[in-house]
Structure formats: structure tokens, C-alpha cells
Image (cartoon, rainbow, N blue to C red):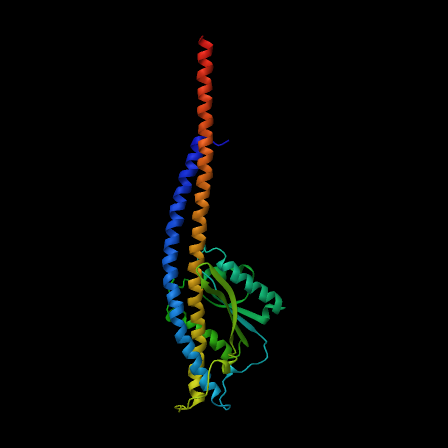
Amino acid sequence: MASLRDIKARIDSTKKTKQITGAMELVSASKMNKAEQNAKGYVPYSEKMQAVVANIANSSTDVSHPMLETREVKKTAYLVITSDRGLVGGYNSHVLKTLQNTIQERHQSPDEYTVIVVGRKGYDYCRKRNIPVTNSILGVADHPVFADIKDIAKSTVQMFTDEEIDELNIIYNHYVSAISQVPTMKKLLPIEDMHEHGSITGQYEYEPDQEEILKVLLPLYAESLIFGALLDGKASEHAASMTAMRSATDNANELIDDLTLSYNRARQGQITQQITEIVGGAAALE
């Protein structure tokens, strides 16, 4: 049985750990609130961009662009959004499990797919399992701006335009609430079902012409989808971190209660033994 000194040391150590996890929970909560605002604030821009592109694409049957055309899928790319640090519960494992399951279900050879990774956890996971990684970005800020991922977003879209890949999917955690983040996979390219997002009720004049405008807007639209998913993923990351630290704090409280009970019982047993020894000694003197 552990001595009173050992139990007391464990209680003190657990209390210090509880202080750390409590502080980390507060920090993550603050980051989550800002990240949630960033993600929600970006939605109107993304929706408007989608509506503009859809209106142009739907206004004429003569307009075409490689990003709107489905072709035979010889190689698929997966853009995976993970965190750079741990202590985020199941945030990374859910995303990476989705990636692994998708690869096993859809592909027979590494030549059929490639991965673009955001976050060190995803990068390390792919490297350890020999999953082909074409590009990666590490150390993304807690509250990223578009300039942080502009290069990787642009190069990823260019891969599709240059026919290095025939399909682009993005895998990330969709933020639902502070306690709910859903692993999500979406097809980004080719862009499909544009008729569902735009109307042709208005009459517009385009300069120089619709096709030239689409050449500029479609890559920007695809890049905006990537950035929107990153903002969504960051909100999920901070929410997962907050939940993990809250669970750690609750576990620390439970452990402290259990150790305190053990300490009190051991102390009580020690006192009882001392009383018994005193009584026994007094009886021997009579």
C-alpha cells in the first residue's frame, strides 16, 4: 500500500496538472469563439461567389471550362486538413481514419491517388504509412488568413487544370457546435451541380465575355472553398481541444477525490494503530 507521503505527492501533482488543463481549456474556448466567428463570417462571401459563378455558367450553353467538365478519373487527390499539435481528442484520428478508409475502398495502387496535407499530424501520418504526399503546409496559424494558404490552394487547383489529377476531394472536420464536429469529405473538382446554386433570371452584360470571366473566377472559387474548409476545420480543432481539456480537468478532479479518500483512510488506519499501541502500552504498565 502506498505511504501517506506518496499519496500526498500524487494529490499535489494532479492538482498542478488540473490547473494546467483548466487554463488550456480557457485558452481553447477563446480561440474557438474567434474561429467560429471567422468560419461563419466567411460563409456569405463563399455563397455569393458560388452564386455568381453559377449564374455565369448557367447563362449560356456555349460556356465551358476544364474545371466544370467531368473526365475519366485516373488519379485522385485528397486535401486533408489536420492540426499541427496534439491534445485535441479525436480531431485528427477521425479525419485520418476517413482518409485511410477511402483509400482502401477506392484504390488498388498508390499510383491512383495523392495527398495534399495541411497540418503536421496528417503529414507525419502519411509519411509513416508511405502514403504519397504531393504538397504540404505546416504551422498554419490558429486564425489563418487567405495569404497563409494561397500558394498551396493555387497549386492544388492548378494540378487539376493541368490534368495531373482528375478529381480533388477535401477531408476535414465540419464544425457543428462546441461539442460536435463531423468528419466530412467533399468533392471540390470538377465543380458539379452548378445549376442548383444559380439562376438566369437576370440579364447581364459581360466584359470581355463569359468564358474569360470564368477563367478567372473558377480558380478563385475553388480556392475559396479550400480556405472556407480550413476555417471550418480550425473552429473544429479549437472546439475539440477545449472538450479534451475539459475532460482532462474532470478526470483530474475524480482522481483527486479518489486519492483524497485513500489518504484519509490510510491516515485513519494510522491513527487507529497508534491509539491501539498506546492503549496496549498502558495496559502493560498496570
